[in-house]
Amino acid sequence: MEKLTIRRDGAAIPVTVAGDGPAAVFVPGLGGTQAQLGALFEGLRRHLRLATFDHRGHGTSSVGGPYDYPTFGADTSAVLDALGGPGSLVLIGHSMGADLLVDQAAALPAAPRGLILIDGGTPLSSSLLTPAELEGMRQAMGSEEALELQRSLAGTPHQVALSGDDIFRLQDEIDQHRRTAAERFDRIDGPITMIMSEFMAGTESDRARELNQAWRDAVDTLAASRPTITVRRVPAGHDLVATHPDEVLELIVAALAAGQ
Figure 1 (cartoon, helix red, strand yellow):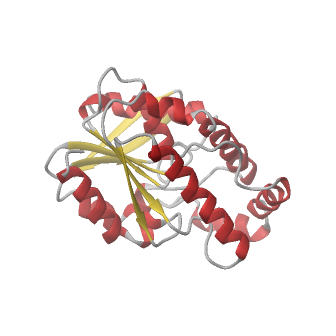
Figure 2: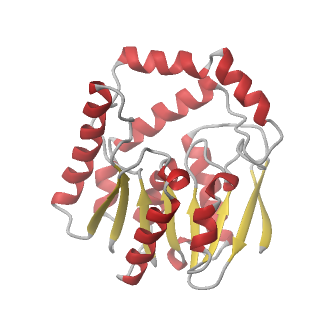
């Protein structure tokens, strides 16, 4: 196992590389860390020479912003360049990490070695949540319970140093960015595999089922007119990379075998 540190704009970004096979990178989502990948990383390193990293303010990366989408994008680009460039890699991303890799792939003159998106990158015409639901989410992020969890993880490989307001603003930036995502998919030359959760919003209410259906519909609309996109679904929530690593691993390996 190899450890690297990429430095950009005041941040020290730790990168872990392990395994044998085609060079690949796994880009975590917002709130995701290397430590949370666990079994999925261990499984993927049997098939790939896999790199992954912690976004700034996450895990063992530097604490300190700015915590905005363009900054996370520039950090990701710096990591990919240090690993040989996005065109030389199999690109795998979860949630926000998928959005960041759609940006990277759309800017390439030719297809990357593979592009696998896990429950992210999906074009949306508007936020799935109502203003009231968004406000409730913002308040929950700033609750004493949320703050206590953040304090308990501080200084560990699982920490997320972003405040509730940081995360709320960043999620809004991601939502806005996804409104033009279809244009970026049209610029990607090559096959794309999308591994999507069936229960992104959970299963506990009629509203959750509505949101899950809206998420599925957005993916189906994207793929309907783009034969290069293959959609696979896992009966899991948005944290499927942690809760269902075996199923996700099987689908990634199948995508690679099919020419991703």
